[in-house]
Length: 197
Figure 1 (cartoon, one colour):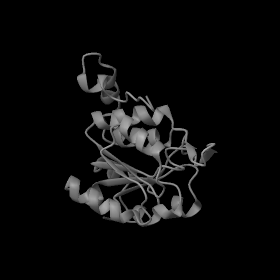
Figure 2 (cartoon, helix red, strand yellow; figure 1 turned 90 degrees about the horizontal axis):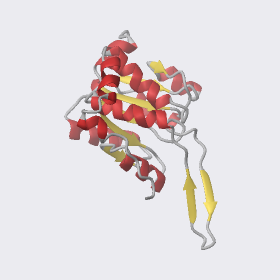
Figure 3 (cartoon, helix red, strand yellow; figure 1 turned 90 degrees about the vertical axis):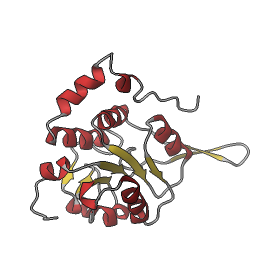
Figure 4 (cartoon, one colour; figure 1 turned 180 degrees about the vertical axis):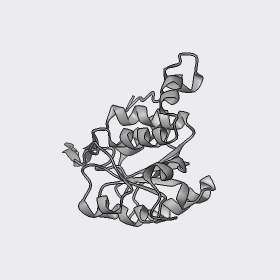
């Protein structure tokens, strides 16, 4: 694909949107609370704006995925609550997961978007059709991006990416209205998280 394509043209091709987690869907903090039994509880904070954005993306027909190096029960819970189609944790080489997602979705790299913030994301960002960096991303990651979100990870960067893609397609407003439609069964069941309940 030509490097001369605008971010809007790239966004219109997206069929699958993938996210790193720490520093993208969270602010990057990893809080570990030791238990009396020696086990630990990991705490992460996610943006509710990103969660609603996931619902909008799904209503627009975009498939979603998390590809992260860390293994975390918190991420598994969030992915379950948001009904994320592709969840790959423990990924030291993220292109391995991306190749599996490409095969599962029968799509091309040009039809993939990826949101990253640190150098571990560069191999994927250098290959996908639409590379997105968060506002808090490392300099090298911003340099590889076709688009940089206005907001930082954990503060709505995921929603920024989704809104940009839907706006580039000219369907952001109609997708919002579909979400707000009380008679829309897909909208009613979107983003109903239960956490640890």
